[in-house]
Image 1 (spheres, rainbow, N blue to C red):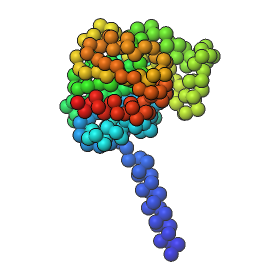
Image 2 (cartoon, rainbow, N blue to C red):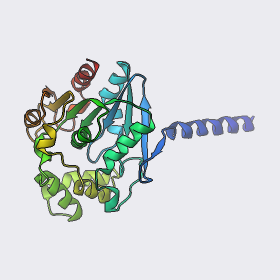
Image 3 (tube, rainbow, N blue to C red):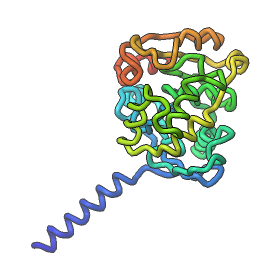
Image 4 (tube, rainbow, N blue to C red):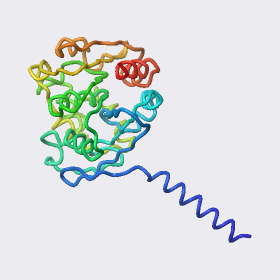
Length: 264
């Protein structure tokens, strides 16, 4: 009888291990392995997470499941340097839009001919650049951001980079740095992400010709005035939902707005 119980225990342990490790790793253009997963069936949507974050942020929010319930196929990924993806430290691994090359390579690997993209915070910054690089995008949502990222000398980016490479240089950002360390994020990688963060100029934004929705929390002032981004992208529109920068993307209102926009 003991042997039977032991066998059952081993089987349950294996099943649990398989469940945890079922999500695939994709080998990107330079050999970096990118973790991703897929939920649902239908029109594909790629969700891009923010800074000091992973794809888990989307899994804890309502948007991912709401989109799946509405008949979309949801692709989430840990951007290089984050989560379960590889975490190279070299500058070469992050320059020249490497993160966006990962997204486009993954889309090609999955055989997608077109897709929608939803990016939040730094994920929205990446989404903007992606719109200039990939003609397969049907619609895009950019949350929690203004047009300030179009400035290559954006002070918020520069300050975050300095705070990560020169401890104590920006006390106002220390709580974010402490949170990153507590959450297990790789601070060398985070510095690289700020150092080589993509810049999409106002001229490039003015040429975007796909439908774009900008979403911001009513208490979110972290990254500037979102109306400036709407003014920079022809035909885009702004929706305000409840919440601060950390909370707006987790609200039912955010999920409902995204589903409505991508469904029409």
